[in-house]
Length: 244
Image (cartoon, rainbow, N blue to C red; front, side, top):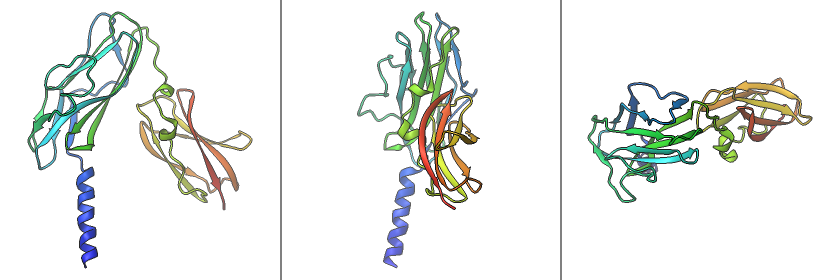
């Protein structure tokens, strides 16, 4: 009985750690790719940051990725407008903006300035709970100037994280892998090939995070390579053993 109660308490604590308390919506969806004028600021507004928990939440902002063209600037406004060199609101010990249960704050905005230079950028912003770093909402801002060249997703990814090892491995009827991309991409798929490099199967991947099921019942027993391909680049490869 004691072990059962302890298990319930542990489960409750676990759920508390990973419970989502923040919801972020906007009046208009963030475009997959925005066009930045060389001489004007690109502004993202009308965000609503809501506390969906039963307790007050101190919300802060963290610009976790700022992959932008040299001379471009990105900055955000939360408690107030920060300069382009600031990635986290309020400094290391700030409490953030307190939001009561069920309440919303509408003063977040995000801005990009090209300073007259052609190019592109990929920026990731987290709205997070000061008391729990795992409790956050992620928003992605991708942009290019009118004549800019889109940044390849290959420069944004960590090959060890974008494609998980298949489970189970060895597989008989099916195997499953997890795909985690930093942003949505075009023409993304999982390529299955044999030891000779012959394509066995091609499975389209939804964006940007997805569990991909690989039907293996029709495969011959042997070793196969799973390659995650996006924008013409092989981002990561895993090995899969099929054994009937």
